[in-house]
Length: 332
Length: 103
Image (cartoon, rainbow over all chains, first blue to last red):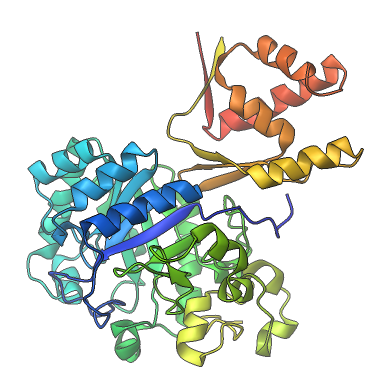
């Protein structure tokens, strides 16, 4: 299949239901976002529009989705319409009973943020004492409720040499998957960049070790979907597109219904309650630019450009103001 | 043995692309490279061409021989070649966890 194949509608939507959060994460991308949220009726209309457009999978984020009182109602609507429903949570409010209600509402998977195998490091990064223990317990409750689980670790200075420890943590908590999310310089992540971000050489060190660990780990699914790993000979099997998936397979919906290519790219292409998603997907000038990036700087002569397409567009935009700039994490 | 789709697979026919493939075939052209549907399971995504889509959409408690017989009524290919292609494709889907065989 040719690489310029584009689905007729996004497959996956990340929907930020609320920006409210009970945590104080140092890298939060939405901490400074506006508080305005769709009400229940608006959120329901949003879900119905997504179904009509053909979206297959809806992932709730934010903010902390469990702070939204109508989460179960909205999730149940999406699941009832045939979409796969999941969310990312810090797990702090996720007890045994909540896990059961999530299952009843139709959640098939919940990702829990855990950034270190050391409780004090995780708690310090997330700004809430006891959060490590609550997150670990949440994974157990989700497993009991027969909901698929994953650990989401934001890779940054506190943990980039903790790969084996994080794998051990995933095994101990019986998480089904371990996601290594690359650090983004958006929101507080931008403000705290010098404290948290790695140098390009350190990113290379991390990815080489993580790819090796993934190759040698057979009892756990390890995900590290960052376009720049293609320069390490990684084929990114299973991905239908090259470069960033944002705007090619997935989109993000903000709390007020505004649609962006991803949660880290603050370019609004429309609003889910005012615009036709199918039409936006097909004709948005922003998406068109993201799907047809032009190599600049060192990318122009790089032999890996065809595979990585300049790496993470969000990082390039955040640090240079130009989506076509080389990914600042790139070590080449 | 019958073939069953893995219920965890998310999938969608790409209506416009499928029409494009059908038109290409009707015009005597090639449609092998046109993705007519998309499958998604645990982070692995597949696009299927027209033949793949027709196979996948029938993988609902169907016997492999019945499947080949059904497809031979749609595609103008000799049965042995069609059967070989279908079995290869089913083997790939099974290996990736998209289908399973059951009594």
